[in-house]
Length: 130
Image 1 (tube, helix red, strand yellow):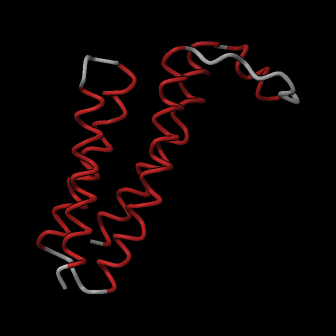
Image 2 (cartoon, helix red, strand yellow):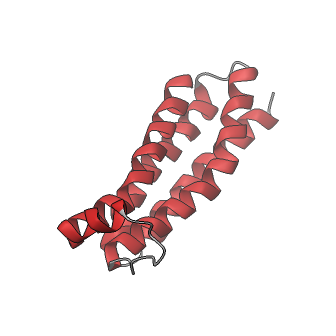
């Protein structure tokens, strides 16, 4: 379970860098000038940077549920079974969520989001069953 927690935190860290990386790539040298200045006026995000930012905001909300559930699972020694499977599903879904959101392919984003929340529900059920 600890490995899944650390993997999710690493994904979160990577995801925080994604919107500015996308903006920097789109703006080229202007991005560095803007970043080095006072940034009084925010740059309008590109479509993909905006999507990456919204995916990060969604991750912020999901982490508020995942972290307590995963810490409770560790506390109660639920390092395998339903709790572990739920955490693994959550992490896999969150990894898939980023490209699903940025590429905006049909209902993919919603399906992946739902799978992540099924993982959270699995973790909650495992904790409630002890």
